[in-house]
Image 1: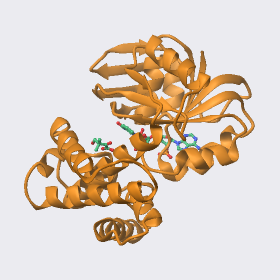
Image 2: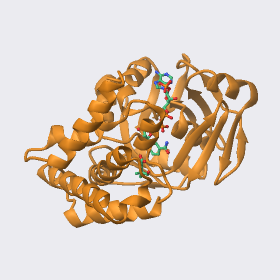
Image 3: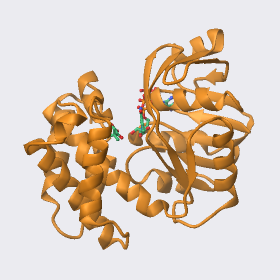
Length: 296
Ligand SMILES: NC(=O)C1=CN([C@@H]2O[C@H](COP(=O)(O)OP(=O)(O)OC[C@H]3O[C@@H](n4cnc5c(N)ncnc54)[C@H](OP(=O)(O)O)[C@@H]3O)[C@@H](O)[C@H]2O)C=CC1
Ligand SMILES: CC(C)(CO)C(=O)C(=O)O
């Protein structure tokens, strides 16, 4: 398959690197990373070590691709959609966290868009080098649920590259379940400046579970079958399984960068029909921090 990875930061470089073992991959990212990948290839280190040689650029080349995988942060989705609008593609797969990404891509693009969730862990260590920090799973499928030949084709291509992949017929529920986990873990760890494992017990854990339970209630308002127990249990399970992780939002705050709060807790607040005070508070606090730093 000819695959374009749009957003060659941490996750895009890891997945692009793994995909390059079996496919013709082009990474679109920033210099000096893109330049180093062109000159010396991409080194993946950690759970798997690999040295691969995908193409790399800072803008989308005027070529045909079978698939574009979007791995920019949620606040860059509109820019990704604009950059992909003139590309000849069979389909696009978003592996971003948060809600609304597939919809914004689908509004701008003529080809089908697949939804995805990803639990692989990745960290761009420096130009040309990405750390593979956690083995996970990619789950993908049509955003409204059901089956599609594109989803099957992409699932087969990811499998061929050794990426643990499930083609799912219930993406709406899976998106909301992942949202509940991110709504619970990310903002709380970012504000409390603690690793995920700190949520297993104590007041920060209660806040995380309450944010996830509110998210489940909003999911049910929208016809998604997600119970309070499942949402709270998932927060605990993921916090335990990733105890030593600094969540992606905590990493953003550590680095003084903008967070994905709008697409995570903010998306819950925006869609809620009943009050969601925990998500409202988490959203307001992170937005205040971003405003103070001139990030929004
Ligand atoms: N990292 C992880 O382990 C995981 C991440 N995710 C999700 O994946 C998404 C990406 O996360 P992550 O990889 O950590 O983020 P990163 O910020 O590391 O990667 C995104 C990259 O895309 C670049 N980019 C943005 N816009 C453009 C553009 N127009 N042209 C070229 N490059 C561009 C960014 O550059 P710049 O910063 O200079 O704009 C950045 O290097 C998020 O939604 C995240 O929640 C999901 C699971 C795991
Ligand atoms: C699952 C979790 C919470 C792992 O840290 C994550 O997705 C993130 O940090 O964004």
